Image 1: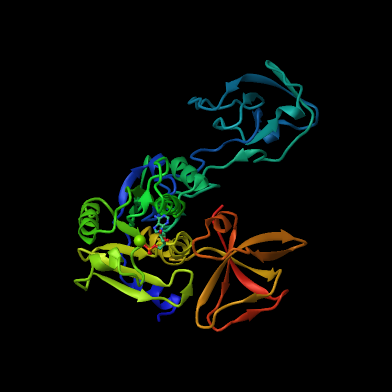
Image 2: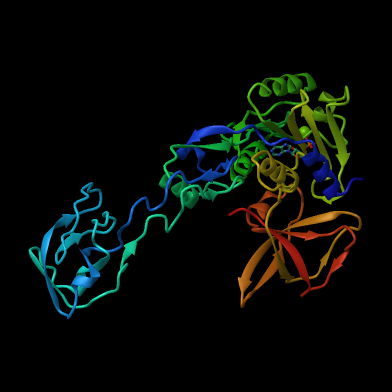
Length: 399
Ligand code: AMP
Ligand code: MG
């Protein structure tokens, strides 16, 4: 049996990040920068006022209160560059360019607000409430390094320095296919022995949570030829493929049968619970395929442990898994020797510390416990018992 870390390293060693494309800003949201973004200009591009008030020369204020004639207004967006004459004030709005000659801004709150003549009751040194050109960003500076995931603030930054589009790695398009003659779509009527396909909906959502674009296909049956053909079709548009089911030790294990010719997909037992039977390969020598086990909890855990880091890597990110915290275990746990155990659990934060409570239902078919969990306790292969109150590692599930 392979260790979890061995299987993951083998997967990662065979992946190549996706080729960068240029996307308009809003389409780039959530994707990862492939090249650094540098500022072509200073930001702010010009000296401007940080307040609504009056632009003046500091030297003109003298003894307070000072009374100065107002020669005009300058608002944000005004293009005028008229110099302010000595001994005068200009009414100025936040973001408006500082008139040449002015060296300080007096906020309206320190004045009587006059439109023709202003009475200023509080003075200020040169530079007061002036936002200087380049004080945010200098022209030529890198504002976003390659590998940055473009969230709201990062997209705002790129727009602020004038880029309409950005070089990013595209969202990986991930085909998700379930196998099993017993499957039907939710909404269909079931005969005895049939179940609704939950894996494809679950994993399509997990793909989206991981930054990918899911391509959910309707379930396939248990005929190896049909499965091969369906996978071949996916190769036309998918950057990666996930299948579920048909990889364990039964006689109807369709995914294993579909690749029985050997070579393309390697099947392994991985020392983990749930999720022992795993397969991975490159179709056409380029498209990663993850053949996950069919039990829904096994498929979900397998996704988080193997597919999430892989999808991150395809996007140009560090191939990390889920974030983890250390938590005090609320009850005694036993765990099989030799298997990395992932237990569905409820993580809570009280009195400055995390506590974790394992769900009572830990079967790999028991979806309700998974749906109610916000964490996975990780028990390493060499640990067979965790006493109540001991600290354990807990993976945080996406919320
Ligand atoms: P298999 O690995 O194909 O033998 O499937 C293992 C178990 O998972 C069986 O009980 C299947 O019915 C169940 N299963 C497989 N695929 C799905 C699916 N897409 N949705 C829900 N349950 C599934
Ligand atoms: Mg099956």
